[in-house]
Amino acid sequence: MKAEDTVRTTHGACASIIAFTLMAFLFVSEYSFYSTIEVSDRLTVNSTHGEHLKVSFDILFPHIPCDIISLDALDTSGQKQEGVSHHVMKKPIDAVSRKVTGGGLKITGLGTIHKEEDLEAKQIEAHALKAKHVECGNCYGAEASLGDCCDDCQSVREAYRNKGWNFNPDGVAQCEGERIHTAFAAAGAQNSGCQVHGNVDLTTVNGNFHFAPGTATAHYGAGTPMTLQDLISQTFQSFNISHEVTSLSFGNHFPGIMNPLDGQKRSVEDGHGMYQYYIKVVPTVYQYLDGRQVVSNQYSVTEHLRHINPGGGRGLPGVWFFYEVSPVHALFEEERRSSLLEFTSSVCAILGGVFTILGVVDGGVGAVLRRFGSAELGK
Image 1 (cartoon, rainbow, N blue to C red):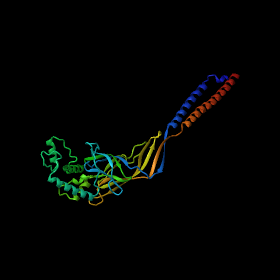
Image 2 (cartoon, rainbow, N blue to C red):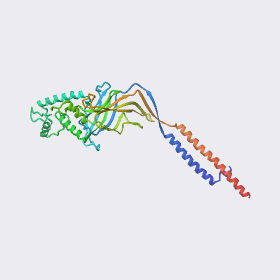
Image 3 (cartoon, helix red, strand yellow):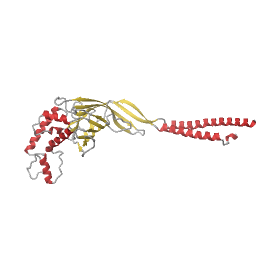
């Protein structure tokens, strides 16, 4: 063994420090590259779809009271979708602060009025129901004696008070008109709005869901000489379709998903219109590195504001979401940039390469220093 191989030198120590530092840095860099997960994507054509399409939403209507607005889902022919399950809540909000001002009300049944002729038919039904109640209104179990009648909301309220029961006007037919009158008054004052949030399982691959005046709207003016034109005009004035989409998604969340309507606000000056969104839904599967899969959907959207006027016969104000499921499916897969074998080979190459190169450099530096040292001694 040569003497210089066992002699501790300053340049040898510096070379060792540089070598270990460089090897540590390159090892960390290589491990970071190996541990980074990339997501690859590919598209396939598949004409088969699931039986249901889940849509989750949270939408604010700052100028529409909760008693006026409702939700419904239709197929491409305009017929009501059958078998739609839903869990949707309505909460009153302040028109300015957007803060919730009261308790939530669950929507028990889907249904809207989006055509003027439908509003006319519902108004006739409401007038007939009002006339029927004039004969002898139901007290809903609170009558003091057999045969007592409660012909208006106040009568039912008094009957409940006399029994010592708590009174809730929801579901009381005599109170529908009173609730709607209060809601229309609030809409006119522009100080009360509604937050509608929840989810709906749609049963067709193409169709729409929309927010429009609820069927209870027809009770406004029931039992009074209010004409259909008056009711249509009042509905237009009270249904300002300005809205804010807090969130709207089709299916489950997965990493990297972008919902283009989240956080979007739309303001309509006169409120007289049908705001229409046209949504292209792309079925998507996201597969994690461990094999777990999330089945969901992405979507793209275009939009259009259709202006309408009272009595024009083009429909009532509302916000519509028309959707169509694409035959193209997207698949996202997580994968590592390199395999474990490639990582191990790279680390060995890094360690061996750095050790060899710095060993050669150290040997060269030592040889140069020895030569200069011998020259100095020979002088």
